[in-house]
Length: 287
Image (cartoon, rainbow, N blue to C red; front, side):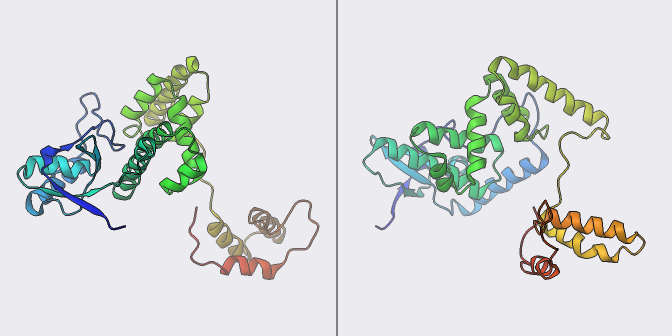
């Protein structure tokens, strides 16, 4: 079936800013960063000069046109070209109100994921809203629709669902600014609700102490990926300054890490297998 389009003035397109998963959150007197300000200014100038080049998406609800995605484009057009109609893509109705809501929210999330580096809390909010629109939707299906991994989807929905209202509000407001990893917040939300606020305050205290003394590193060190481990493995023989027993032990440890050896050692190490693992997939990306 061919796509349907409709030409609308910006003022004819209804927008619910709370519905969009990409949000701009004021931060207690904090000015936007120079990069954010420049990006917004360039976007505004592009709309002023060229108009809206990529059609936003709308859906018909009770005779009114409601925006599905393209909030920045429509808002900018309303400021810069209020009398110029915008070509909009129409989201076809399935005839099922609940399914239409799910489809619209999934499209909003996926479109924003493609266009912007969404913050974890924005993705969590978007996924949670899709799940709320259709509670029968499985995590596997939700991950497939959003083109995200199932563990990531499960973690973010769990974070949004279990977070104490104060913890969620603070994570939204300060998470990006203070570089708080969503994994840290995920640990907090596994606690009973009454203990989450204290855990959040403790996390902030750790971050502030680490900022005062950078030598106090917080969290786990990043482990080397398989590509780097293979490079280490093939470089062991070049460590001529080290005793042979040291080199053998190091090589054995790397072989175990790469899955080329098992414990207990029931077979001799296969050098050909190591070489094939080391050279077989040059395009593999490091973790």
